[in-house]
Image 1 (spheres, one colour):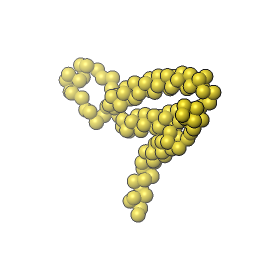
Image 2 (cartoon, helix red, strand yellow):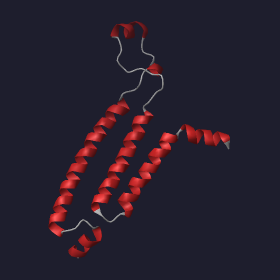
Image 3 (tube, helix red, strand yellow):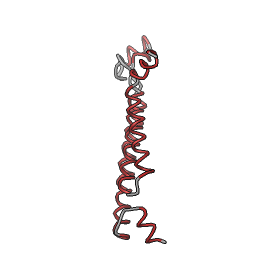
Amino acid sequence: MDGTLGIIVAKYNYWIYVILMMIGFYAMIGKRNLVKKLIGMNIFQTAIILMFVSSGVKHGAQIPILNKYEVIKHGVDATGVVNPLPHVLMLTAIVVSVSITGVALAILLRIYRQYGTLEEDEILEKLG
Protein backbone atom coordinates (compact mmCIF):
# COMPACT_ATOMS: atom_id res chain seq x y z
CA MET A 1 0.00 0.00 0.00
CA ASP A 2 2.83 2.40 0.85
CA GLY A 3 4.43 1.85 -2.57
CA THR A 4 1.23 2.73 -4.41
CA LEU A 5 0.67 5.79 -2.24
CA GLY A 6 4.25 6.86 -2.87
CA ILE A 7 3.74 6.66 -6.63
CA ILE A 8 0.52 8.67 -6.40
CA VAL A 9 2.14 11.36 -4.26
CA ALA A 10 5.24 11.49 -6.46
CA LYS A 11 3.12 12.14 -9.56
CA TYR A 12 0.67 14.60 -7.99
CA ASN A 13 1.00 17.03 -10.89
CA TYR A 14 -0.37 14.44 -13.33
CA TRP A 15 -3.36 13.87 -11.06
CA ILE A 16 -4.03 17.60 -11.11
CA TYR A 17 -3.93 17.56 -14.93
CA VAL A 18 -6.35 14.64 -15.05
CA ILE A 19 -8.73 16.47 -12.70
CA LEU A 20 -8.51 19.61 -14.87
CA MET A 21 -9.17 17.52 -17.98
CA MET A 22 -12.24 15.98 -16.39
CA ILE A 23 -13.56 19.40 -15.34
CA GLY A 24 -13.10 20.68 -18.88
CA PHE A 25 -14.63 17.55 -20.38
CA TYR A 26 -17.64 17.80 -18.07
CA ALA A 27 -18.14 21.45 -19.02
CA MET A 28 -18.02 20.61 -22.73
CA ILE A 29 -20.42 17.67 -22.47
CA GLY A 30 -22.67 18.55 -19.54
CA LYS A 31 -23.34 22.27 -19.90
CA ARG A 32 -25.98 23.73 -22.23
CA ASN A 33 -24.57 27.25 -22.50
CA LEU A 34 -22.18 27.67 -25.43
CA VAL A 35 -19.87 30.04 -23.54
CA LYS A 36 -19.53 27.49 -20.73
CA LYS A 37 -18.70 24.83 -23.34
CA LEU A 38 -15.98 27.12 -24.74
CA ILE A 39 -14.54 27.72 -21.27
CA GLY A 40 -14.56 23.96 -20.69
CA MET A 41 -12.64 23.45 -23.93
CA ASN A 42 -10.07 26.03 -22.83
CA ILE A 43 -9.64 24.29 -19.46
CA PHE A 44 -9.16 20.96 -21.25
CA GLN A 45 -6.57 22.46 -23.63
CA THR A 46 -4.71 24.10 -20.75
CA ALA A 47 -4.53 20.81 -18.86
CA ILE A 48 -3.04 19.08 -21.90
CA ILE A 49 -0.49 21.85 -22.41
CA LEU A 50 0.54 21.73 -18.74
CA MET A 51 0.88 17.95 -18.90
CA PHE A 52 3.18 18.08 -21.93
CA VAL A 53 5.31 20.88 -20.49
CA SER A 54 5.76 19.04 -17.20
CA SER A 55 6.64 15.82 -19.02
CA GLY A 56 9.55 17.62 -20.68
CA VAL A 57 11.13 18.64 -17.36
CA LYS A 58 14.40 17.07 -16.21
CA HIS A 59 15.58 17.87 -12.72
CA GLY A 60 19.19 18.98 -12.61
CA ALA A 61 19.44 19.39 -16.39
CA GLN A 62 20.74 22.47 -18.16
CA ILE A 63 19.28 24.54 -20.94
CA PRO A 64 20.17 23.33 -24.45
CA ILE A 65 22.57 26.16 -25.27
CA LEU A 66 25.95 24.55 -25.80
CA ASN A 67 29.43 25.63 -26.77
CA LYS A 68 30.01 24.17 -30.23
CA TYR A 69 33.72 23.66 -29.63
CA GLU A 70 33.10 21.59 -26.50
CA VAL A 71 30.44 19.60 -28.32
CA ILE A 72 32.86 18.82 -31.14
CA LYS A 73 35.53 17.68 -28.67
CA HIS A 74 33.46 15.81 -26.10
CA GLY A 75 30.00 15.28 -27.62
CA VAL A 76 26.71 15.96 -25.85
CA ASP A 77 25.49 14.20 -22.73
CA ALA A 78 21.77 13.99 -23.50
CA THR A 79 20.90 13.18 -19.89
CA GLY A 80 22.23 16.55 -18.74
CA VAL A 81 20.32 18.69 -21.24
CA VAL A 82 16.60 19.51 -21.36
CA ASN A 83 14.80 18.58 -24.57
CA PRO A 84 13.22 21.83 -25.85
CA LEU A 85 10.85 20.11 -28.30
CA PRO A 86 7.85 19.61 -25.93
CA HIS A 87 8.05 23.21 -24.80
CA VAL A 88 8.27 24.55 -28.35
CA LEU A 89 5.35 22.40 -29.47
CA MET A 90 3.27 23.64 -26.57
CA LEU A 91 4.02 27.25 -27.50
CA THR A 92 2.49 26.44 -30.87
CA ALA A 93 -0.47 24.78 -29.12
CA ILE A 94 -1.01 27.92 -27.03
CA VAL A 95 -1.13 30.06 -30.18
CA VAL A 96 -3.61 27.65 -31.79
CA SER A 97 -5.70 27.61 -28.59
CA VAL A 98 -5.91 31.40 -28.47
CA SER A 99 -6.82 31.50 -32.17
CA ILE A 100 -9.56 28.91 -31.74
CA THR A 101 -10.94 30.83 -28.76
CA GLY A 102 -11.02 34.07 -30.74
CA VAL A 103 -12.82 32.48 -33.69
CA ALA A 104 -15.24 30.68 -31.36
CA LEU A 105 -16.06 33.93 -29.55
CA ALA A 106 -16.75 35.62 -32.88
CA ILE A 107 -19.06 32.76 -33.88
CA LEU A 108 -20.80 32.89 -30.50
CA LEU A 109 -21.35 36.63 -30.94
CA ARG A 110 -22.92 35.97 -34.35
CA ILE A 111 -25.12 33.22 -32.88
CA TYR A 112 -26.25 35.55 -30.08
CA ARG A 113 -27.14 38.32 -32.56
CA GLN A 114 -29.07 35.83 -34.72
CA TYR A 115 -30.99 33.95 -32.02
CA GLY A 116 -30.83 36.21 -28.96
CA THR A 117 -29.47 33.46 -26.72
CA LEU A 118 -26.49 31.18 -26.22
CA GLU A 119 -28.47 28.35 -24.62
CA GLU A 120 -28.26 25.23 -26.77
CA ASP A 121 -31.84 24.13 -26.11
CA GLU A 122 -33.35 27.50 -27.02
CA ILE A 123 -31.32 27.71 -30.23
CA LEU A 124 -32.42 24.20 -31.27
CA GLU A 125 -36.02 25.13 -30.44
CA LYS A 126 -35.82 28.21 -32.71
CA LEU A 127 -34.26 26.16 -35.50
CA GLY A 128 -36.90 23.41 -35.40
